[in-house]
Picture: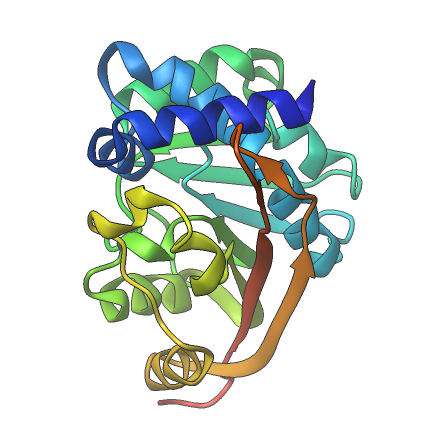
Length: 233
């Protein structure tokens, strides 16, 4: 069932790649719920991969940027006890849906969801142990503005995890021609270091093949990891 859903998304991408690219950037309108569910199926391997790398610990403060419809928050809470999680997304429809999908967790105070952008985070300095995002950095036209905000809200020594697909994987899809920005590992390392991070490296994972009805498409997850510098930059 999972592979079938992933294949269905691949087929819809082929039919209208520019529209799909717009929705991947910011789900909106009547399509927001559909794209949110399809993104979950398409990105679950990547999400689990990044969670494994994060090695969450009890009582940590965690921020997710671009949380989609919020159906993966349970995965976060299964990794450690008494986590305090906040999320921010700039799609009004997605925030509304995520709140509906997480009413119990929100009501007990362990989850807060915000409408906004990662280049202007509504959080105090030194608030989080870990910040992460998946399939988001493609859309940062000025990454420094986002990274400086993430650096600001991380505690000294806090870590940032940026999950995505490799450039080679993403360019296999026609939507990648519309508004996607790609960085080579050396470029991303430099950008992180210029914005208050020590670059801890990148990790990669080969995913199961996706069939679009004609061929098997290989995908590879990648996660760039940075640590907030304890010295001034």
